[in-house]
Image 1: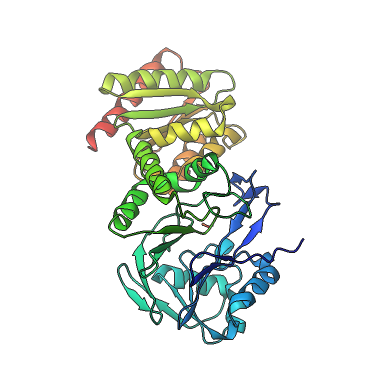
Image 2: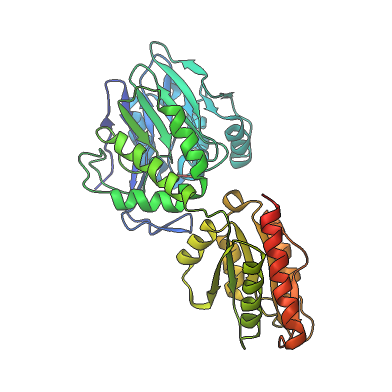
Length: 401
Ligand code: FEO
């Protein structure tokens, strides 16, 4: 059955988005068991305005919906709250048939779009608090950088009290009812979306929520999932609660000490380093053999730690896969400047620490030194060296306060 549904939200605002029931994973990192939607909105003001577009593969469906509510040539503004291609994917083609349209977004959004589209286009860069007269209706822009890209803003339609938020307050959930009071319970999808997409940016989420608290809001219109017309406050409050929980869970003096060990040499070094760290002061050491730990658990532990130590033996002039996977779980925005160091056992060349500390620096961690490598087994004379390395790391953690 063709998807040709357009939904009236108010007299002047319509949902012209598309439903994606078949998507299995999103951005490679998220499973989407409920599918998703790409929500685009049309504002029928004197200056006809579109807010977000949809993923490129849905162009035909999207255009057919747009044509139900507007002659595309008459579109004057296309607001891009966030430029990721699931929202900007149809922008290029829309600009072809809407030659009068100016793209409205943050400075970062316009810069990103130049690279995404590959051509220059008419645009208007807007800042926090700035307004745009659409003719009897007025847009007001609200800064929301890093939710979850540096380009992100929210857009408030003053007269109708509608807040367009793109990814913020959204979830991957596909239901043609579209409204929060119609689609059924989607709280688990909302929580999962927050955990995967927004949680690393919890600090910015709280700032954005502070900015919208003074606004009188009738409904929140996100870029994915349900239109929040009845329970928007619940989902804003939940986002605030989740963000505060995430920030509070970061413990001041807690080190994630993760290692892999083939013959328990690196494991023994890890234990002695842990002993040294504890001797340095009031520091909680989370000593973990990561080989069989699931990624979600490791990511949670890293997010809660204030420092990161990784151990790996050198194998064939390289380190082992589980440690590379840990690097994929480090978020340079969330974990920036956390003290870090590397260690391991080696037999011949011992490049492990160098490979790990290099990756740590690239991930914006604050690296102690070149790391500690011990040849084969940490025998008696090496044990004090390992313990002292732990003390040194502990002092490094405590001294930076
Ligand atoms: Fe829904 Fe960050 O894109």
